[in-house]
Amino acid sequence: MEWVIESNRPIWLQLQEQLTLRIIAGEYPMGSRLPSVRDLATEAGVNPNTMQRALSTMEGSGLVVTNRTAGRFVTEDKEKLNAIRRELACNCIQEYLQGMQTLGYSEEEAKRLLLEG
Amino acid sequence: MEEKLIVCNELQKQFGKLTALNGVNLTVGRGKIVGLLGPNGSGKTTLIKLLCGLLQPTEGEVLIDGQAPGPYTKSIISYLPDRMYFADWMTANDLMDFFEDFYEDFERQRAESMCAALGIRMSARIKTLSKGTKEKLQLVLVMSRDAQLYLLDEPIAGVDPAARDFILDTILSNYNENGTVLISTHLISDVEKVLDEVIFLKKGEIVRQDTVDHIRETEGKSVDALFREVFRTVSYGEYAPHQRAWDATADAPDKLEQPETANDDEGGEAQ
Image (tube, rainbow over all chains, first blue to last red; front, side, top):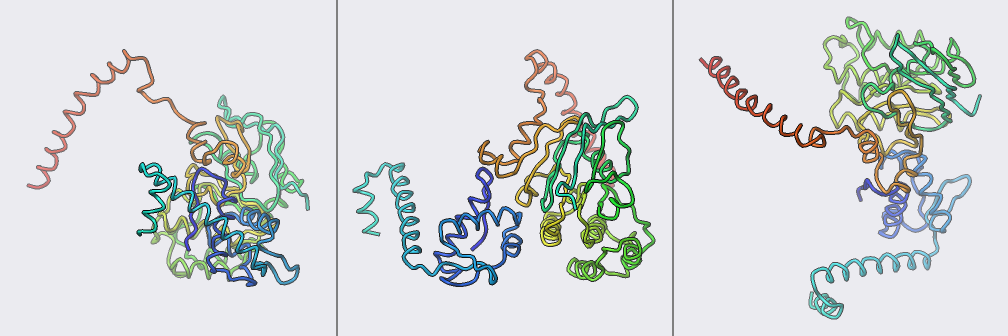
């Protein structure tokens, strides 16, 4: 997955979203150790303090856990990951429906078209 | 070790009648990458030279790690000037000998491995290098010191976009938690992602000092976009209509004449 930073929103927020996505997508598997802040920052081409901020907020929400000596790990709480995946799925659905609405389809028609593939 | 790495109090610098800096108050902490942003002639280089001790303030004071510029501050500052200052008959190897002699905190191995990554030959004379390569070499030397304050005056202006990324990577991976990097530039969109804080300098005064993400949060736009707004120059089109009409008539003959002369020249060369 590539790091993409848009210009009009706070950088730490975008990093947090993309880190979350990577975890859900299994790029950083459950219970695995995350790369160091500095490595992640260099990889994304961003300031280490900004990456730190993104990771701290993820710690706050329990998605990553810090082990004082060994570094940061992805949570092993499967339910938590599933809940977040569900939330992200809802966002995708909303986006789809909005797009279809712009094209002039009703919600019913949009559903039918989706099923028909 | 002072927590505030840079302190400027009511700093003023005059060159004859010209006021380059006017009442600058500034505090910068440690472990930060700070952008010093402003259009040409806004006082960026003057401020950096005052921090280095290359210029003396007309009024006010500069403190680096709690001390006025002098031998101590020079030992903890690594400075990249806005132009090349090396003797061009020297080789990269000679320069490293010099840096090793001059600065206790110079890490020769780091410098050599960066040169290798950039494909700079250690035995090449400076004068045989391209402009961009010279700039890269200069930055390698400056970033290979374990300094507390890195003052980089326009480090990315003269190099291609790929080298720009390499330079920013170099800055990101080489600075330490106690150190601060101050980068002056007007190429904001290229550096925005790596900065913690920005300082906007306008006509010798600081008009804004803020964090990048706070600007994005409160303004809903990038620092680059904000910069364009703050420093927007009025274009011709925004003058009074009669002036625009005058411009149009004045422009027209020029536009007709130029291609003709250009064609003549080309024809002459071809024969």
